[in-house]
Length: 537
Image: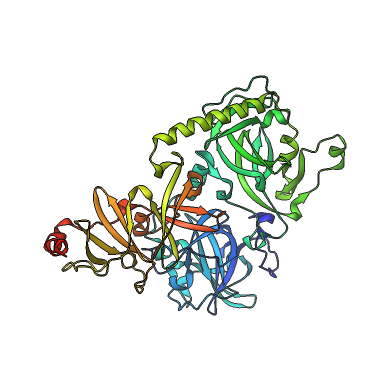
């Protein structure tokens, strides 16, 4: 994985002698047994984070974690191997692995990085071991102080057989290469999450011609495609390409090539707009879209690989570069640009006046559109409103367009003979018979006592009303497209219901957005027997 990636495992020590032909494995403990993952599939190692549990998933799946904006499914490897799993402790860790898909696996403790000579790896079938041989790539006997190291292949776990596996590289390419993505949603690289708050520089790397540059991640709001419609600004400097509208805000577009004195080239599909957010000194945050040849990746760089700009460059008046990152033994140099220096002193000429006029025009058009929209859609087509409710301390959301109303629980329900276990009964909703389903039982969650906070969320799906009992309804939440992330790889049953994951409060809170169309509605024929009794009641 190279010198930089080796440094990402800050917890791990490696006291093995460096040999000429070896394979590296990240070793870990489950109970008293030592296992190893090939280091090429280990992305990072983190503490056990807060998790959002997903209904209809296997018991080995602990939930979803927000890993720097990326939604990560986390599984308990101990349960997968049939080992009685104790409560997680301070020593417990999540090993983030990626083969065909990316998942987090909880283990009891991480040990060290082992250097294993290839000729020391024996066939797993020939040796007594803890887990089935079809899960192992091989075993190593008497390596250092270890009697037996079982080399594990997580992709062979039967728990993953039912997952709808998507090609992670294709997903990443789609996020970076089409549409837009939040800066927080781009995958990090280089150091472990445990050192995230230490001396680490996070940057968004990009290309201008054959040169690689970067901006500080804190200055980047999002990355989007170059818009089709760009309005020219009269008498604007060469660096200003024009104005466009992004999420009902007028955004000046700047050519980074022009800012750096590089000749412009014909636009192509790989060009992107990096949206920068820069305080102007008065407390107002200005946003600029910077057109770059290609957006590459988000890197998390240890301070050991960051160097100051040579004094000779600074003496010639260039303050545009904050620092230089030296990676891959110095073969890869990335100049980190100062967004403030490049753009705070940028003279836009009449662009500011055009910007103010265009902003007013956009706001007037938006106001006219809102007057014609229903009140529940007042935030525009890019926004979506969700009714957020709780089940067993987890936050779920469903489109407000699917919610007919929210009502209190009645004193009693009329039972439906031979109905499924999740059906609580029938109620009379203004003369109409409506089935009510206990959503906890529907999602195979533990039952709870009735309370004053519980509500019935009435869904209207294809013209049929069905009520769902939830623990409480907390809010109507407005989210933008940038707040919504497709769910990670889930089993087929869970994937039916979870449509998106909404990240709110700066990514600290996750709301599982449910697809109302996936819910099984009660067969109307089941209602006929009890309908007359309900109406009379």
